[in-house]
Amino acid sequence: MMDQRWRPTVNEREFIEQALQSDLRVDGRRPFDFRPFDFRKLTISFGREDGSAEVLLGETCVMGYVTAQLVPPYKDRPNEGTLAIFTEFSPMADPAFEPGRPGEAAIELGRVIDRGLRESRAVDMESLCVVAGKHVWAVRVDLHILDNGGNLIDAANIAALAALSTFRRPECTVGGDDGQQVTVHDPEVMDPLPLTIHHLPIAVTFAYFGDGNIMVIDPTYKEEAVMGGRMTATVNSNGDVCAIQKAGGEGVMSSVIMQCLRIASVKAADITSKIKTKVDKYTTDKALQKVKRTPAIVAKEVNVPDVAMKESMHSAMENQTSKAPNDDQQISEDSPEPVLIESNPEVKSVSNSGSAGESDEVKESRSPESLVDAVKPKHKRKKKQHGKS
Image (tube, rainbow, N blue to C red; front, side, top):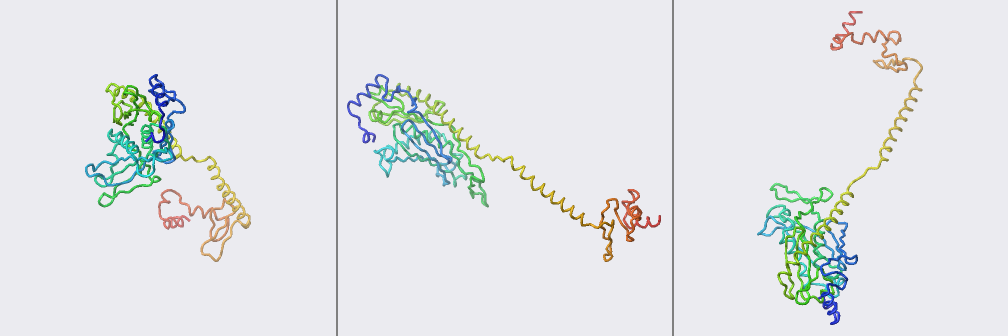
């Protein structure tokens, strides 16, 4: 497929092969250099939504997007979720890519990444089970090739891992009369949950030239057009081999394969650290956006209505006092009980006669002499007081 886009001439092919024999490459790298220069560096960026990542590996650009939905599980695995990889090759990325049904390159890319993720059990499938035998989460990873600059497998694999690391599935609860009804909660009600990822399987691609004795890591699109064979080793940071894929071409000796695996383990540890650093920064920024801060001006604004209310109450009391009569007492003859308007705070109670001199005697007659009298009923206290008088 690459030959349809760019077919090297005989002189170009010989120039590339002779340069590789001298441990030089067209872009200035050594055979085992993995994008060391600025124009070949690895860049990982994330979108606004969880589960979206874009990877720029040299001139190759791949975008990954992760979604999930509840589906019935497979009959042979009733308590495990599913993980599927889908690839889309756009003609915008490469004129050789045709729209419509995926070609051989798209199918091969999806299978290599899917084998590295599922066979190594990188994602915990049992944690995706909601109700055994009825409801499980089906995780789907869509990989969109935006630009083809060579080594699509490595770039797509990193995009899939970055998108899976930042994906959050909705929280759900099981209830109902039979205990089988599933309720999916909105992210604003309950925080979504991340996927359980045990390790990150990193795909590292090698290209072989000549009789298989010359090999390079991370081939460019020009080197892919000249290479005689290709091998992809999927390794995690611990050095565990998750998968190996040899896409035809020249035969390779076992000693060369073992050398490639040792190199791949070193590169996998470096790429894993970069992915985790980017994911941690993304998670921290997301957490800071959810923090709500209260401005300090609110406390000052709350006190303003209280002061205004106190001033209004004080002015109302002054107006009422100015309208009161100058006499010490005023008794209404129509009412059966005395109506008092007090202007002197020393006067506490007034008898029906209306004289101010009798106020102290009335006060003594109403107040109990001791604690025992205060406990007695009111009518007994009155009788005792009249007897004394």
